Length: 478
Image 1: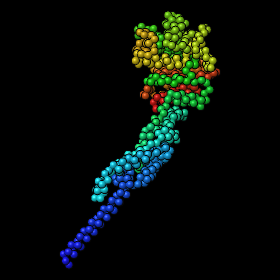
Image 2 (image 1 turned 60 degrees about the vertical axis):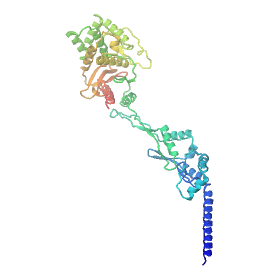
Image 3 (image 1 turned 180 degrees about the vertical axis):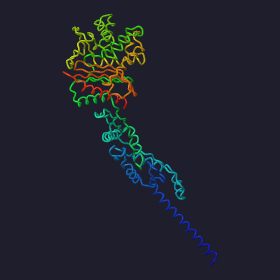
Image 4 (image 1 turned 90 degrees about the vertical axis):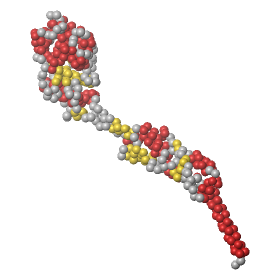
């Protein structure tokens, strides 16, 4: 073959290759132009890869992902939150518009060249555009709380054991914290789960009111058809329980406590031996004769005046319902003294006209005595500054500790417990005990009165007081 023929063949082959290359390039260009109508390669929209998808396809993918229910966990309950419940809306238009700026912002020929040589393209990230109704979400959570929250159980009193249970703790949905957790779950396209925030609710501790209910239920079930008055004072916190506290009762031997306090208030020095014997006889032996001797000393030789002076000093202490209109075992009719308590028309225990008190007044007096003895403060030195000392109050408390009768309040506390108290029993219808109980978990004042019209049998009633005392001790030392 001639050189001329060879040259012509080569030229035609070259032209053919060029035409093929140009054709291939045109095909790539047409394909790239078509791809340019889709989202840019590498585009991430709201956490989902949507590169090379048509806008309609991307929007459908987002609606499917973010329209899926969110799985909510309330302890062991599983709930499903449909986004439609809270009017959730995806702003796909704004997200697609932002993606479009990425596509059109790139140089056509530069992008075509990168595509032709299959160079890696850096992705575009379009953030999520979503909103919903927080008010609807809060309403849904409040409804969930109403269905699944567990309120703490109230303490339960057991009349058989005289114990009061601690109750049971509960739990409650923390709505605001749970809204934050759900918001995070709503903003992810997968693993749409949220553990709701559950806050523990402390168990209800037994209260003085629980104790009062136990005492009332007990005497009712015991068949007692009279009147119960009960005052308990927590000497650590000052919390009180009061059941019928302002009822007028016969003063009985419990009035020997204010007599003793006023005796020490009168003394300028420590009592001498004869005085000690009279004081001890008044409390330890509960002797009416010795108590009258102390009244005589308070009245400068006259028992009646001593009773009047004592009553005046009790008024200074604010005890408006406690008085002595006469002395012990007096036969002469006493003057009639009216008090707020004995003028009540709803309760009438037909109290002794010679001497009366109320559980509330005795609780105030015993509390003041304890405070004076333990710290030198409280009601007694406040009202009578310089006239009664901490040492004198402590001496009175020590005497009351020696009133050892193994019944009433004492019978309700464990053996070896210390109780400073004075009890009394009237002519058949009233029984009472007022004291300070020193217990491991805290000291307290306990005043109990029982009254029954007609006759109140000691053998049947004294155990009621002992069991009430046991309830109170258990309450403070459970």
